[in-house]
Length: 92
Image (cartoon, rainbow, N blue to C red):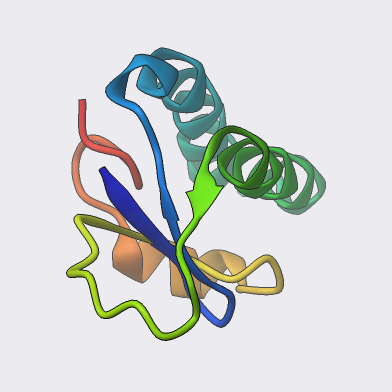
């Protein structure tokens, strides 16, 4: 799956990594619903770090359609809320 981190670029992630990412996404959703700004910051950073660590960066000139778009690390809680679906940032 091709994932874009806003402001950074795209990475290709194997489907096998989504179990780990969904755990972080669930935690992020809980923190957002509770209004836990500190927890939200920590977990968003951990989620993006995991995507960077597990994914293979695509070249800057690659024009692949992104199947998933994640917020930038400095996104606000309100900005991320606008990006959410019922499943969080990551479907599944």
